[in-house]
Length: 196
Image (cartoon, rainbow, N blue to C red; front, side, top):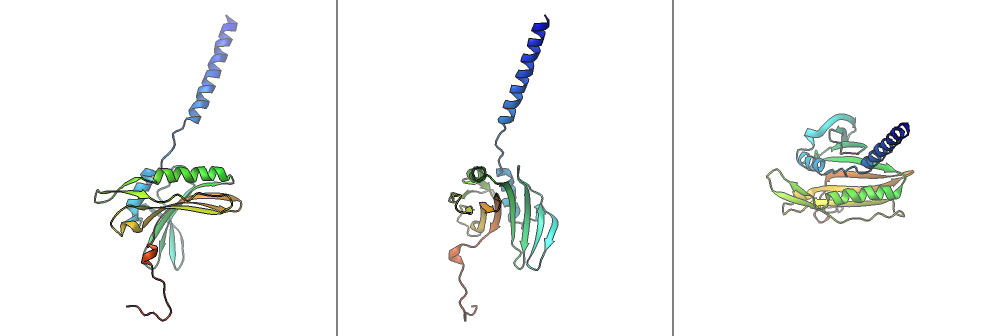
């Protein structure tokens, strides 16, 4: 009787440990889509609803903590630039010395956001789209920039960027949301030009 009790106890112990190990491996992949949807809405209000405490100030900008920190992210912040009152948001999603791990995270977030439908304030729906910039270990930087597919030029100024960057001794993966004029809309300044 003692032997069968000990055998049953040993079997139960092994079963619980195996089940516990499997449950830790089967974690669902976290998505950042809900936070990005929230941040896109906040972008159109200069991120006012998600600005936290002031972290630093200079003549050209003020950096705030962000009240939105995507799942698994290390840190996030909002930068408000002067003049013009434009703002950008950024989060560090990963820091690692392992290039392959950094590429895996970079690619995962690109796949989550590319083609993501975005519900705008007027209840219309647009999608994020942009080319995948494939990282290479010999290159210290890669960046995939997504924008809203819209006929409205103002909406296309919004950029959602996933970037991978190497700064000795580690790779970092970042997510950025900001405004950028289209290259064809930017006119170089020529000496002697007078504003019209």
